[in-house]
Image (tube, rainbow, N blue to C red; front, side):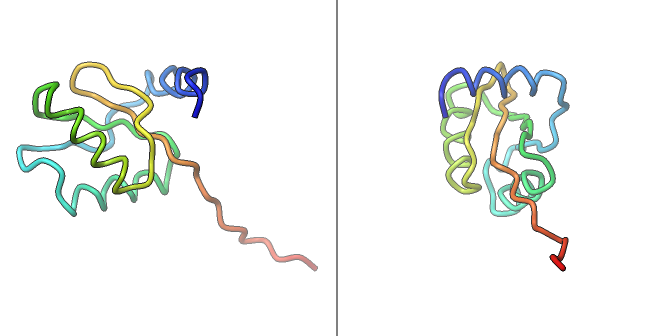
Length: 94
């Protein structure tokens, strides 16, 4: 993803509210499952982190790898993740 594309996704994420919150337990399998489900509903999801900035970078990388998404940016304790939304074709051809 180019830096211009990331900037566009960051701009879109400004109006979103965090859909997933990382608690004191950090990145857990349940949290990964929750973020994955959120990314299936919307291609751009905001995540709020409870830990400091130094831990946030590692947690962002771990979440991005686990959900096959990309962290498009963050500010403070919030980061935005993007993954292409794959829509299943429910239409049948005649």
